[in-house]
Length: 455
Ligand code: MG
Image (cartoon, rainbow, N blue to C red; front, side, top):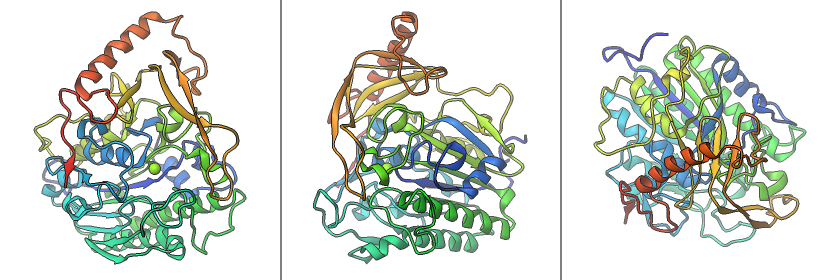
């Protein structure tokens, strides 16, 4: 493998496709049932598939903030999911992937769900993106929500609201519209380096699909929706091929958090992993991760090392030939190019990976070991919901518990008593994170925690 692009070469293009609430087992090669994902499976066949890839928090805004800034959400004060009444977003002092790439001559665009502040000063166009088309937050934050009332949902182009009241009919077109805009942007910028971030609104509930895929899968609406996202990935790959950009472009696919299990037949699946969205169990935070770059990433490779969305900023910066990251403050992500390139003996750069929920450190993973600290978590009371209506959760409690993920991927058997030395080692790592990133509900108070952006 060649090293990263030398500074004098034209830097590579990057496309990140980011699904919403798609679980670990919702892609063909990860075990999806009742529908097919030929284009995503092709990405795995022609590129790398990671088995132990994590998002930073099992909920939309926090997860997206981490991907774009390379920081744990606690570090930059963005927790949970920002709604229509939120008055904060990414602080101006933070650097997004788009901002880091701009000085290297990149054209940058986002088509899809932003969810990092909907006021003008927080929009993508103020955080390094040249072009934006999409929803400012989740597609269920609208008047038709089954159990809560929200104001009208807007659709934004650049910084202009082009549709103040997104309708169910509009929702059926979101995946198509985002894809068409991405294809057009790639065509327009084929002669310069580009970064396209494509965070689909789907398969977050309410699920909608266009006529192209409605009723096309055995799995029903959820399968139809994933089939359409797979089609979208295919359109991107086809465009890159047509423009002869295949070998210049790294394409990544992953999701912001695990399945929203209370929605039952309208939710995805975490497969063998425990629980889903909104928890620090692996079903909430471990996601499919596919990366394709012909000639640079070995075809058909599988990586079982711990890696995460926070690693994408430093990795893409390195590949773009950014010699030194511009921010003077700490970030948490590490360059995972050696893992992507399949370098022999490449190891996870994370001695420990931290699992936070709502400002609280709930678990830490180091190698094959994951230690949960006592915490409560939500779990389905009975069966999941049907037809787009949620079923109730109940709160459950877990005490200190150690799991060997190599033997027990479902986090079922506590082995803390058999491995007291591992428990002690992971406790020390966790204490370090608590001092640095904080460990409180509400306001986060670590030594190096920065203020979120405020209106
Ligand atoms: Mg989500």
